[in-house]
Length: 163
Image (cartoon, rainbow, N blue to C red; front, side, top):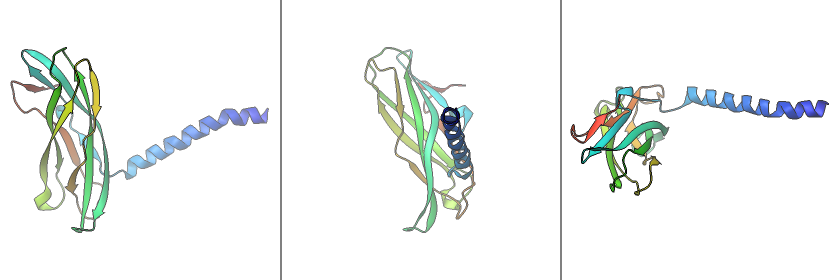
């Protein structure tokens, strides 16, 4: 009986340990990036159709000290979900996104824009894409700072923000 009870408790305990590791990593994670709600998703148009919906759904990132330039840096690679909205022959999805800081070395503050190209073969209706990480200098020795990320809607007639 004791053996059966311990076998039943084992998955429960493993789940608790995994949960505690996730909670702990959230508090020490660097960088902490907020995806701005108003810039989280855009729809691309073409030929009178809504072609693709692009959503920023998360990010991978880490912080490190760059020995070469003697500065703390954050690397952020946003994760995107791309959904085909109409059955067209368009296969290339071009879009831009930004990473932004408000705190840090003066000449590194502000927005940096990055460009992406994702190939969605005809017949493919959903894809995920994570580009190489963008790198930003961050405040020295401080890993609790604000960073923001979002998608840019570049042209009024070809892209619009989803609310």
